[in-house]
Amino acid sequence: MIQWLCAEEHIEILLGDLYELFEYRVEAKGRVRARLLYIKDAFDMLRPFALKKRKSKVKNNHIAMYKNYFKISFRNMRKHKVYSGINIAGLSVGIACFMLIFLYVQDELSYDRYHEYAKDIYRVVVEDYNEGGKISRTFAYTSPMHGPVLRDEYAQVVTAVRFNPWNFPVIRYEEKQFSEPYFNFVEPTIFDVFTFKFLEGSSKNALTEPYSVILTQTTARKYFGDEPALGKTIQVLDGGDGRDFKVIGVIEDFPEQSHMSYNFLASWVTYENLANPRALDDYYGNYNYATYVRMEPEANINDLQVQMPAMLDKYIDDIGGRVPSEKIGIKFQKLTDIHLDQTAGAGGTSNAYYIYLFSAIGIMVLLIACINYMNLATAKYSNRLKEIGVRKVMGAGKSNISQQFLSESLFYSLVALVLGFSLALLALPKVNGFANKNLTLNPIENSTIILFVFGLIVFIGLLAGSYPAVFMSRFNVVNALKSGRAKVNNRSIFRTTLVVFQFTITIGLIIGVTVVDQQIKFIKNQDPGFDREMVVNFWASPPINRSMEVFKSELRSNPNILGLSASSRIPTGRCFEHQVVQ
Image 1 (spheres, rainbow, N blue to C red):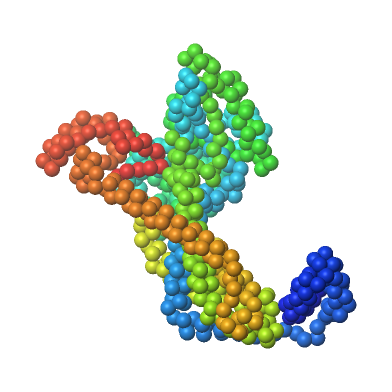
Image 2: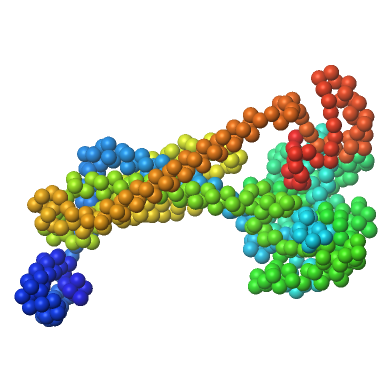
């Protein structure tokens, strides 16, 4: 009650007097009566201290106060160079590591989020079940009729779009000719599902005409240079006569943070004219169609999910004597989850486990740096006792002392952030090369980094300075001035806990780094049974596939070729249509 009502600068003296009087009364009158008299004395003090609640005419100059705090911090930094250097170095390395990990995690979590309806888009996935009902295989592609049925018969589905790849056709324009891996036929509903920025042409009525095609910006420059691509004609060769396609639009390149990468988007009606009509009526098998649905904003995907077995049983006859819904199942994979989903056949190229792991490592490294600061700051408390005592005598309360040490911590974190940012910039090219990414600390390209930097300053300053601020503000004034020493009591237990925690994390990280390093060395040095530098693989074009034996005979005639073989895909793993090995 007294602490609540009393002016802060008088609390310590008054409580001390009351406590001395209480101890005297305990011996003279007993503990119960001493407590009652203590309460009476406290209430007797209410009237004068209530008057202190009136608004003071004296205004604190907060700017000058904080200016003084930072000035003292700078002087202490210059005076104790070794201590300051260790503190700043620890914080700088922790900040640099945390910043690089933040960039990596941010990049991994940003995949496919640039689409306007990203949160409502799902990819349709087919699961195949064995006799025991367990998943034996997962397909990222569906049968051709799954998309139309979902679009036409379920109210919660706004629309659906299907993709079908044309494997490595040769594209020709005048004298330029290239084999292209990313050529896809796509339904015109693509623009109702995904978001594209048109540089030439528009999405209105796009891809509704036969033999029309949209190119990405890089592809347009590859064939037409700086000339406008709109209205030009390219020839698509697939072993037979060429077919002319008219360019009706140019879109921006797919961002790196996209699980899709198509250089050519050709009209679906063209595919219907070229394909066998019977192949387009399949509800089972023929898993060659990437299918995406866009749901109503308020729709629950689970409500649609429970209706899929009935849909399969309606349109498919029994499969090998089994009920269709017991043989296969249809699942819906959220668009923003695809990149981090490594389900077999689902096409994910990363793993959510590593995101959690790296995030935990980043936080632990930052905690180590902050704990290091706490321990060093409190270990040097004896050098600051007289300073704190003088400040208290001059009227500074606990909050003022706390503010001083928090300000000092913020000052250290600001200096460390500048150095940590510089370290991160120096290490970023190596990190990009190792992770095969284009991470950037440029605030123009990555505006989030500005908020992140300011948030990091405040977080580190408050976290690292919280314990020293509380620790320093609780010293007894008389002892601090009289003997230059302060009674710590059980506070050292907390410091010991911090040190043990710090070393535990550090040792764990060192063991983890050592194990991973040994694994990488093992993979690099282990003999795979062939010379990696002397084996080459490439995709064969359709004309080569049709004359494979002739082509192999030509290769054998080259004395530099010791052996050769052909396969439908790379033996070391399944190759998806968006992964091309050359």
